[in-house]
Length: 167
Image (tube, rainbow, N blue to C red):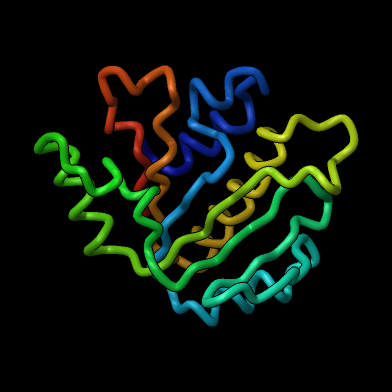
């Protein structure tokens, strides 16, 4: 799926369908091929995010509005790679190999319930951060992959055409 199409669907999808249609859920990963320090700089300079902590070798930020915690890794999170590295079939292997070859970092989104956005569904809050990070990638021409964009309605059988690659 094309990124602009995904972002449009993200805006118009009812909250109750975000997981089934667009894969929005806790531990939602995005891959970028970017300079790690540049991405950290963007999060630090944005008024939408507040640095929370350096935990081991990754950084945590809180979405200022609430409900979402962001982790930024200088590697690809294996649990987010298509197929989790199991390579159950040829198509899965192709996506897995493409992701390993073309991306160098992960932005992982988590629901965070200590500070909530009043009246906002946590999946919608994650969708807002997905949109924000994607707009960053578009604006800077940063290659991006949304491997978790395959909604749960499309997992059996897996519809890998729903994985988003930009550009």
